Image 1: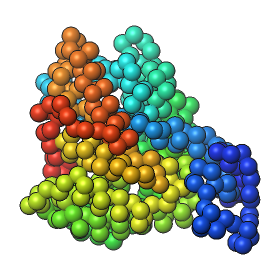
Image 2 (image 1 turned 30 degrees about the vertical axis):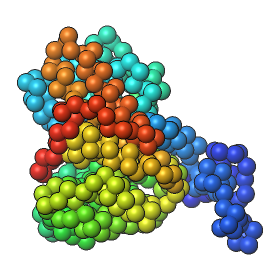
Image 3 (image 1 turned 90 degrees about the horizontal axis):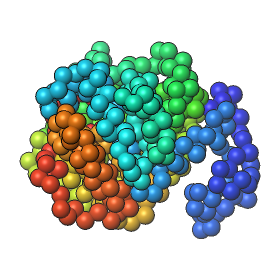
Image 4 (image 1 turned 90 degrees about the vertical axis):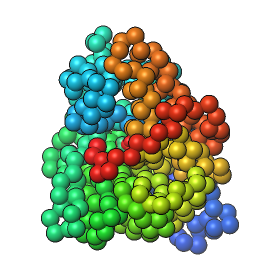
Length: 394
Ligand code: 13P
């Protein structure tokens, strides 16, 4: 993205140029073209063409993102749950299992890595990044530096990582990353305060502009935590507020909307609310929020799972894909893709193949849900277990 906001003669879909048109010569609403065929100026930068292509590849039909970008501390908790120590060797073994799963690229279009994995090789000496590229999976990188308390707020937090970000993103690009992730959180029980929402939105927008300037498609993730006893209407209200600010600041920072991906939480009741909501209710509230706030120029909505069970996350995604949406509506799950894999692997080399099969089962189920064709049949009891953890850190 060029800071000297120029307009390019660019249209990835049709290679035609309309340019600056007078209002009267623009297509009228009744004859509006489908988004993929619209040919209007896009703010140009060194990487604009590539950003559009990367985003389109990630948002391709029947595919979504595998998030494997847990910090070393969080990865340690995952390993601890199956009795393994948090060593670099164990983290390598686990990530190798996931990223070398044969056939994964049929269902997974992108994988978000933690910095250690981006620079890591398999035990056979092959770069993890190359294992992904071979399967047509785009490598991504978590670039935020985590959450710290936000002074002056209501016990809320803000996300660090902007200092030196441009030099880190350029290095990550050289290392093979083509997209980035920045996760900040918003807490409903803590308010959220206007200050915390504004800070979250501004940080995401600055990060997105910097990432695009380095050739990385930014995943914009203001996670609205499941924590709380509020109902679904309150979540809808907060999500609308948060996304209106995020979109506002993305625009103010001249971010190219065609070259970003969004990672929202689904609109659900709080984890401690007295009533659960059906998949249809969750899909209805989530799509309502997205239609009200997210421009159709955005190519993909890649949901986080946030502590839902594997099956719940898949059912809810499926419910959102029962009729066409303006964006590719898909998944970018960590817990909802990894839970049964971990439980199957148990850290034993002889279980690697079975664990990879378990990953394929989940990836395929979510691929079907992306296409609106998931039936929910034959799911294991393990896949139905909720994974909500109060005050979860990533
Ligand atoms: P979960 O799917 O476990 O909520 O992880 C989301 C996330 O932020 C990973 O990038």
